Length: 117
Image (cartoon, rainbow, N blue to C red):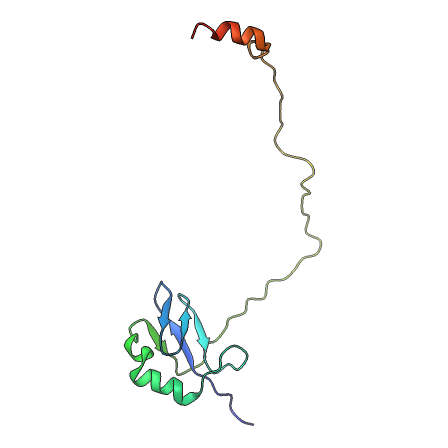
């Protein structure tokens, strides 16, 4: 069985890093496989050249080339179907509509009171 070709890089910085010779921006704290044919079209010699003297070499303090593939930890969280979820039809809060006598003015009364201003 042939081994999968992988060229993993990891951005260890808290900001996005641009690799100019590869025309690629690596998001903060992310790992990507540059030999993944579904997403990238780089060749192994092109990536090795970038690691030796290109943008991967210049930004080696921000981007690290991984020797080992990253391990993805999957947490199995059981799904309980009998869990009760409240509907949002009823609100927990009571809404009271209050009316104030001093706010019930007609336009003529309001104009008469504010004509002095």
